[in-house]
Image 1 (cartoon, rainbow, N blue to C red):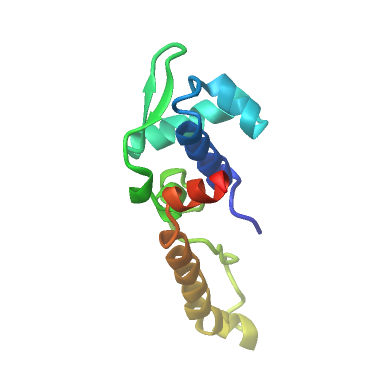
Image 2 (image 1 turned 135 degrees about the vertical axis):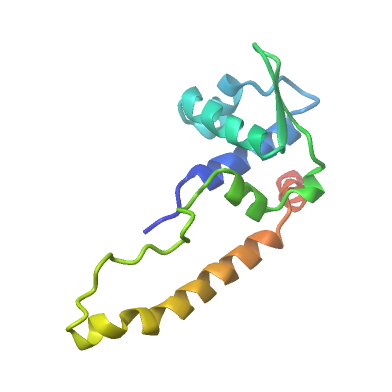
Length: 140
């Protein structure tokens, strides 16, 4: 199982918007060429980032810009903005384990806490990385 590529695409978009802000307009076509995906994919993610309050998008070919300082945007913010996983959580459990089977009867008892801990650890890690830190690495 993988998390949707929307997280990495959204992060790429935000980094490109900030990196190129004084060099060119960061339009959906420009961003699509950098990410190497269809501009429609970029436009959908731009809308999600806009709705999350991270960017402004100028109509026409005005391009996008950050509304928030890069030091205030974490990867967890991006992850949540683009709905990378279902609201129920990162791990999707198979629907109906057999209650008559000794494994099926206890599978939730055995795994639920561990899976919640794994998701919490991942979210903690994402929360500790800001867009500003990633930009600094790009410029090295």
